[in-house]
Length: 122
Image (spheres, rainbow, N blue to C red):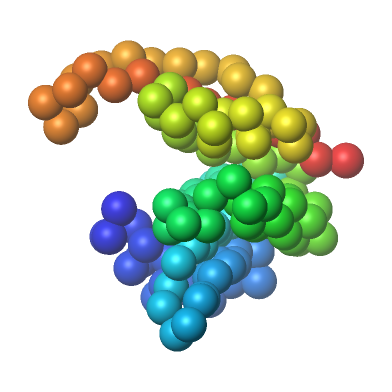
């Protein structure tokens, strides 16, 4: 994750953005929109400190990212997550994403199912 995030930080694009949540001078959450292609954005790095979960911060970050994606002219947004995060999946579905693909494979010496969600923007 560190290399793609560092590459993202070095680019300057009006079609990409990162939101960072700070609390008491510490970074406690983030989300980003990354340009995948002309019509398609990728939602990445939705991360929240455990103390902030179930308080609406994830929803607020995702909604901000989707509003930005619409304003930036994207026609769709997708994301990849893992099936072991049911709360995240519930959040994605509740804002309009739909599951379109899943792939199970060995990752970091574990069997992991990655799930792709997509949303058409209107």
